[in-house]
Image (cartoon, rainbow, N blue to C red; front, side, top):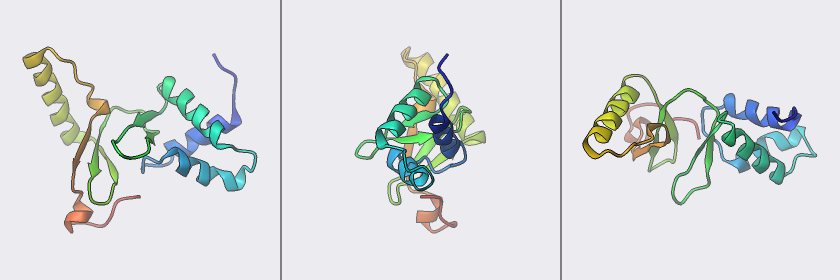
Length: 135
């Protein structure tokens, strides 16, 4: 068990209170004004600690900085190729993907990690069908 860290708790709070899947830079810039002693190295160390403990998920999108998800429940993500938003997929959409992952395993013998899956396409906002998502 590791000892309590106020900075780690601040970082976790910033992620759990945010559905926009921020980067390490965003976390640093968000917390730095109220925490002048905070360093970028501290942010990275604590993000890695939180990921290793399963409290935060790291989302790697090719060609972009890693993003972090503070929502612990199992869900997948959709990335808009136009605006870059990462959107949580839950409910019926997530169930369909989980069903696909099970069928894929049965057909191929390969075990997919649906929680690490990031689907890509165009979001409703960029399609012109709804207001924008967070960025």
